[in-house]
Length: 139
Image (tube, rainbow, N blue to C red):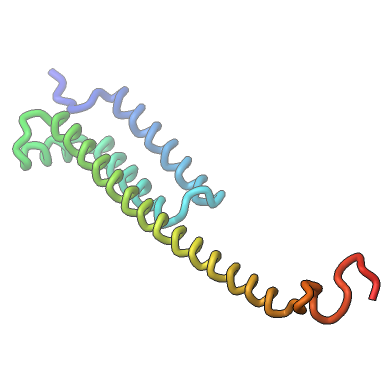
């Protein structure tokens, strides 16, 4: 009788898929399409999933410790919790970015108004630029 928690074929496939995913994340960081800070969550969770794939007894022990009857239910619950936390973190980051964009747009508008006021102050009363003829005009 087999007492394997995960069939060997599924364990190998899981480890290969996780390794490919980890390499993909590292490639995204190397090509600067993903920031190092944002990649840490993916790297850490991928490494944790790899440890669980290599040693599935960890999942069974954690499931029983948390009161789950079946290890797959604990895995499903952990996945839902992980996704909820990931959505919350991304929502917070999006809100912070929106506030930064709004502040930058306000600063840009303020600087543009100052520049326009400075240009208007340098013009002569007749509308011609101070200091001589404008472009295309002879002095």
